[in-house]
Length: 433
Ligand code: SAH
Ligand code: SF4
Image 1 (tube, rainbow, N blue to C red):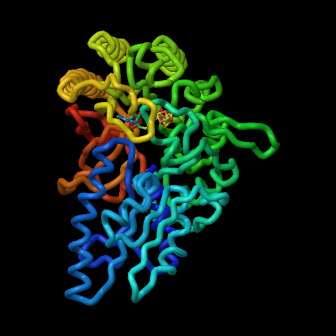
Image 2 (cartoon, protein in one colour):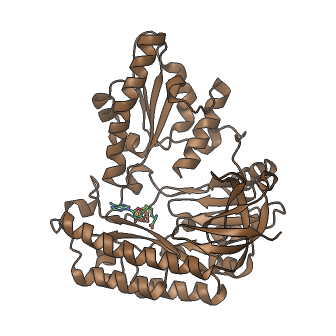
Image 3 (cartoon, rainbow, N blue to C red):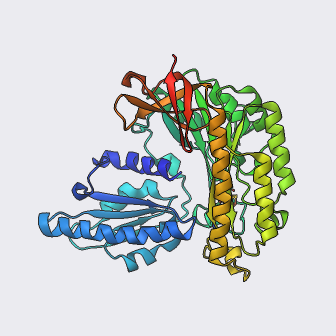
């Protein structure tokens, strides 16, 4: 979602004459879009700001040029004034719900006297209504934000506090944005939301649509070839969404469905509001309607109170499901969340040990999955040139990165390839059509 938001900030600054640059030393404005989900991500912001201070000083001293520094995103939202206190060289602090105001904030910066502007409101207006309709170049695979925020309040998570309450964009604005993307050459759209499958909106005839219905509608757009959505919560996998997996060929047979832990006790303490059996049941239903579906998940190890037995339950669940890929993290205490105040924190070394055994298992599953793709034929979306000369980089329906020799004219198109070799994180292939 931060990639999507960064693109939207770029769109909103374009009318002021700003465009994306590649050289930090030449920039007139530097925007860091930040993540607050884990402590490490948010610490990085301050070390990055230290580096940017030097860039700013150099431009001022050597070229008498003022570089504006903007901190956007969830760290901005959570830390607010603390950022300009710790890093007074930051000019603007703007939250994830107010970045449409960035052009106004830039205009309000005093050209002579240094002033800081902080806008981390949860505003009454909708940012999507104030963002330019013109989208800059997005490429063959693009993101489209349909839902934001979260009302689920998992006990470890800051999202409900930084992104705010759950909100769904309207059907009309989503379909309009999809049309704009498609007319500029986008072939694949990934619908985005912190809880994307909780999306709901009123359809043209006034009836309520869920994400499944929206996917059926998007699939009717002829030039759109592939649809994905992320990230989903197991509680919101409803029948219509499952039937979209059964019936919509354009919906890729790959689903990121995080469970976090395989222990019912921990799931309850996390306030996930479902059991491991509920989750396995959803997977069974999905697999029964779409036999070739592959899955990924997020896992947290070392949640407060997690015992060896709880952790073993997570490994057991992973064994049962068999994932094509996954993300896993050590539990990170987030200020203001209920789990942060629990005194049963798991020692750091235990977290590290658990994370490495978990990742060993998940890596082995990913490699095994990639191996099953050897000799298989796939339609892949060619996204870009590969670093190696003459090679292209594309994505399979399962999001694997695939490399093969082919002409650059294929970029932005679907090619048919046969996988020749599987690696841990990618595939090699030969083009057949
Ligand atoms: N809405 C999604 C998750 C969004 S956050 C869901 O409910 O599944 C993305 C991932 O970050 C989460 O799935 C979780 O695995 C991880 N995460 C969130 N808070 C965390 C924390 N405090 N410590 C470690 N990992 C965390
Ligand atoms: Fe965070 Fe996801 Fe839980 Fe919402 S559902 S609180 S985003 S982990």
